[in-house]
Amino acid sequence: MKKFLIVGLGNIGDKYANTRHNIGFKILDAIAEKEDLTFETLKLGDLTTYKFKGRSFILLKPSTYMNLSGKAVQYWLTKEKIPLENLLVVTDDLNLPFGTLRLKTKGSDGGHNGLKDIQDKLQTTKYNRFRFGISDAFSKGKQVDYVLGDWSDKESKLLPERLETSIELIKSFGTAGISNTMNTYNGK
Figure (cartoon, rainbow, N blue to C red):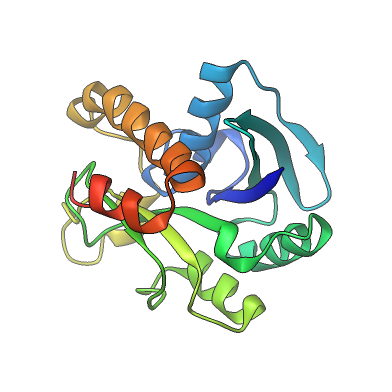
């Protein structure tokens, strides 16, 4: 069975649960809720496995806090013997309008500390990432407050549909491949 490691980036703890920075956790939680999966706390994170069309998606929410996500990613890739091309990191992106989905096969960390740590631990910028746009609707000097802030009422109303599309994107990544998935979902 072909295996994939899907890593949702976020920070552990109730105070971060509904923040923009935790969209990676939120998307994996949405898959778990829809498919009636339960996360188990294991080494360096909470894990569950979703089986779909002959594929095994290992969903990982690192417990290392955002800025140290690379350690958990590296550990589970190695432990599960998953090739780098079957890794997908789900993260927030300030440079995309709210709810915009962007899949990439490589790139810079874009100033994102979670991606920076993954890049450092894996020693490459060539890994798949799924960026979920959270927009940059904050005033000068307020980036941290915005990223670690809760979704606005308007965003909260639009989020369920965006989460559903995100689930479909992840399933497509494992079944249709990265190129087809990029063509189908990028910019949506």
